[in-house]
Image (cartoon, rainbow, N blue to C red; front, side, top):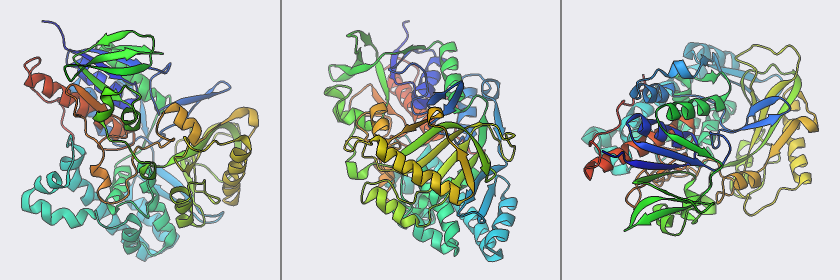
Length: 512
């Protein structure tokens, strides 16, 4: 009996996960990727002989990948080497004010007590309890759901679900909710930053996103070979399971026949026939017709005002001194509200930015002996890359503000122009067309935003969506969950028309 044929467009994390899951079930899978390597946003930039992770840098929710590999009869740890981090992140506000958060909750309680007093430490315990509860309530009806809705969220647990609704705090802003937990404004800044993991402002995002704090407390790992090593491992396992991956192949059109997806047409003119197509790309590209007119109705366009954050980044190799870096470091602005007002209201890069530094040669407190090291320096920026060009003078002005903020906190980075590369929102828009450089799809502003992300199934039979701009949202593990959802939906639909066994993808989703 011939195998069902699937084309996956894009070798980002979601596309690779879908391809791996489907190939492991025996389907004939072809991945077409316009780039020369896997990863999508999980990209690397070469500086001299160094490869610097210049996309996602934080690895959490390991269980998503443990289950993915187990469903294919493999052990994740055999393919990707992870090291758990004791220090989740190091935070600074000025040269003396520093605070580490730890994987060990009790160490964080003690550190917060030393930093802000015993009352704040007690309130942090309450915060941990409540964010754990938010996650537990949402795991099954939201993260596992192929297409979430408020009705489904409430109805999942009947009357109990209705009673639990206030506990997930969907109608409060994250900032206002944090004010009830923390009296010290620096702690509100620290935990408000988790809204940016979804490309959003803590002043407009729902308090539900506080669950990200719980996700990090469950574990943060570094990956041997960097984050790109995860993409390579997924690609290798997909190929080992029988998938074909074709790099340097741009898809110009998703083909349809009798209203059903029937394959893709490449830029070369070649047509690749399929029984189903999974598009792992920003939904803005689909909605704006970059995959053909017929597929535009598969996704609603994201208005520019609803776009998530973009970024200005510098990938560099440099020596550092002063501030002792951990792997993940955050240096806060002196006016957090003004920072997000600049980005979302005025569409300008902030004058006083919060700066994230990923020191990729470090785990926890290990040093690099004064030698040069691999760094990614990032600030949040507006997603205006399709409307604003960033010239060299503007980029340098932004660099002066960014590296000046680090100097204020005691970190000196001895940067050399020939050993660093900047990426602007305009560059991100070129890498990911039709997005304006938005890195997270739609912003999570307002309680309905999470329900506006499309699920895997579309209005076009046989066409599925996956990636960080779809449900359940942005970030490496969430994108992976979207890939699993697309694969499971495809398998179920093929089964419903008698072409494959009607079954969901194996491997449940559990936090532990």
